[in-house]
Image (tube, rainbow, N blue to C red):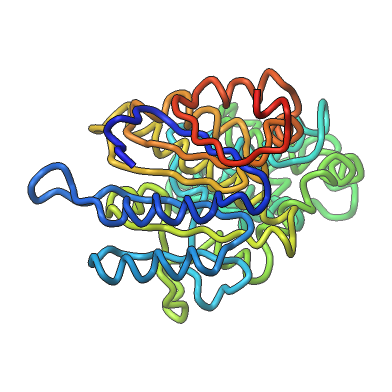
Length: 380
């Protein structure tokens, strides 16, 4: 393929068994073989998202990387022992981005979706105020187990900064606020909240946590029901370890990557999602990784020279989301070239929820490679 004659992004359509994946093999083999256009530069990065996970494609990429001396990275939730670890919340330009990445996966509308996003955002803001980075596992822990410990931690840091290390020597002498101690003795956290209010300080992270602590537990539990299944899927067991890697855990030697690091190293990353076994988890993982890529490209566009990077998505209707539209719309300026394969345009309409959103994707695809198609609308 003369890539230089194909500016922008490329759409590949073809019905089942028409040859989309074999065509993808040929194209990605060519990309792995490409050299950097600049002497001494790194070769183009290649990111493959394969919902169905094709074993021949994986083997070919691995072999080609060995022949060319390229770094091959393999991510597979179904084979965690062979997989690298990927942190989809590693890169963000605005503190609200990690909450949006998780929130956009929630299957809810209206007040439930808004409450879920607000909950995640407040938790993440507090985690950052505590000097840590949010990940999916910590989000799950605080949403399910409560934020009292996190609230106490950021209050302690706040008081230590204002009053010094002995700020709490008279904490027991603080008069509780009306309504505190309703379930028995006044707790240390309640005294800390009373101290914070009486001193008249203003801090968004602390005030958000206090609001969550004092919120009706029954109402909170009802409102976050839409969020808990998603966090359980992505933040538990092997998948939780893959998507929320702990760099301080020396017992786990699997490499830790994120999309920025993949592009910086000019690596070849294959993401197999195993959608045939669990379509819901596969779709959620693919969508949140695309969100990380969108954020990474945004940072490149704003602060760096354009990268040299290719993105291949097979069965794009399995993972398409608003972040993919952003990648197509603005990613070209950051240096990424996208190849999207689908069986029919109807698949994209169903996934994105409207013809208008599907048209947003199609309008950003400059090139078309059409194999055999069965849909009349797609053929037209």
